[in-house]
Length: 70
Image 1 (cartoon, rainbow, N blue to C red):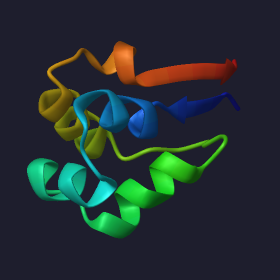
Image 2: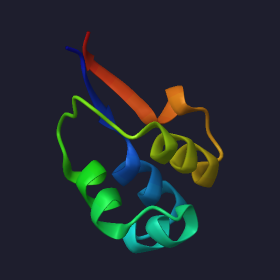
Image 3: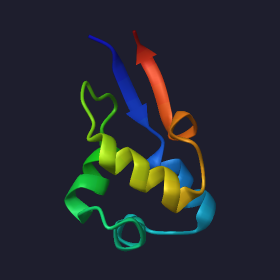
Image 4: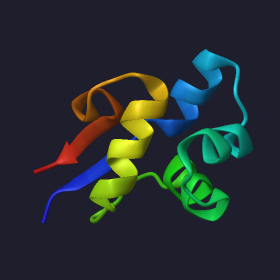
């Protein structure tokens, strides 16, 4: 199974937002945003959350996902 990392922490920093602000702007619970931001690798991610994050950062999903292992 492949592993990915979400670039939530870096993207929030670029925008000058806290993770709490990312949560509020995206409609994703803070605990989920925090988990995505602090996890070095993930095997599964909620697709709806990916879409919301991409929308809030005004990026394509591919731009917020870093493939670590296929």
